[in-house]
Image 1 (spheres, one colour):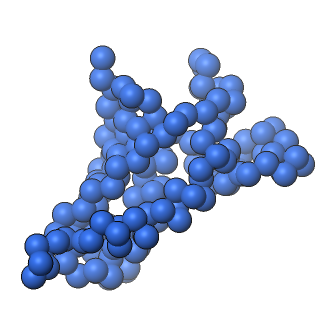
Image 2 (image 1 turned 120 degrees about the vertical axis):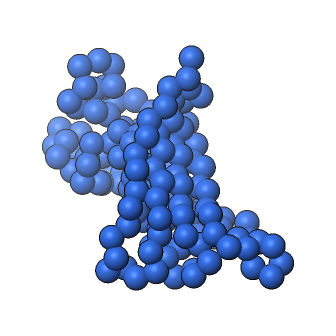
Length: 146
């Protein structure tokens, strides 16, 4: 997936891409067979979100320079309402995926880790409430390894 950070003072203000990786972790009560969630079911929920952004340009709607270029040339683009930092991408996936897990009464927590490179990750984790009217608590973290 490609993106850019127009506000950035360094190289990230230019169009560039990453081979992002995302980790989805769930916490909850196992069923009678000892599973919190079957991996095949997890893949069926997560995969459509991955396909949506795979080989696309993730574009902040406020980035009119790139937005106009992408629209006029028909490139695969996903428009979002935030700067496309790894932290914001992890939060976006957390919010979107948590809706799918809320209805599963045995799942209580979700953690999303977005790896931008081998050494840099952003993480969002929090509780998932059963009612969509409840406020979900979540925390953002960024990590860089050396």
